[in-house]
Length: 293
Image (cartoon, rainbow, N blue to C red):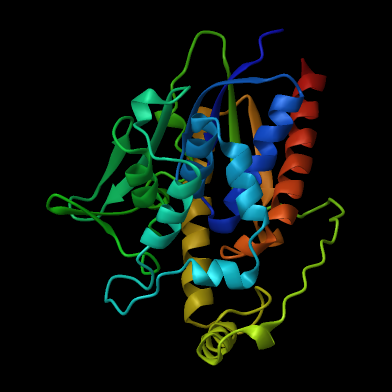
């Protein structure tokens, strides 16, 4: 088979979804042509940026973020439905990459959110790209849900963490799935990227909040179970189980599995390392596929 046209599916997984950037870079470097794309949550964000043709701009911005920058992008609020409004980061991205309608993108793109009011999946294949992404990334209890008419929309990964059934297929294309919630060991040597940051330069109130967050978010998965860690672990298990059922049903031609224990859901300031590991796992999966042909 010489055809290298692919339908690409990008799964959800918080900051681990940044690995999809490395996956895309490796696919392109090996001559694959991405003809259509679907993604949920962080997969929707990366996939949407790729479909605009501006993924490199988004990648460079992500890789420039330090811990403080990530924190400053969180428009924290006191709400019963979430801790973060989610508007600030979207507006920041719009400054770099203007919004556009999904139907006007360079390739077919689809994403989804979960309608918790009517208990169903809502699929976006047209309309504002950023509105669709904002709905799809709304992690329950973290981001405030998106209100659409009489419904409330949350993270698409709740119902469809690997949206294989939403990607547009064409004759003889190759189905490629990037799963960032795989329960596999990380066998790759990681390049350490040093980051120095003077927290003493932060305003006192930011230092106080950071200290509070650090006390709730364990440094390791085996640390004591706090509120944040409990929520993260519960969501991760749910995503993994649904993903396994999806993969068993659709059986992709190339499955790129990213070890979920390598990075946390909120490690956005480690973008360079995550992208690097994404490229490595993609290269191994692609080579295995080519060797079998």
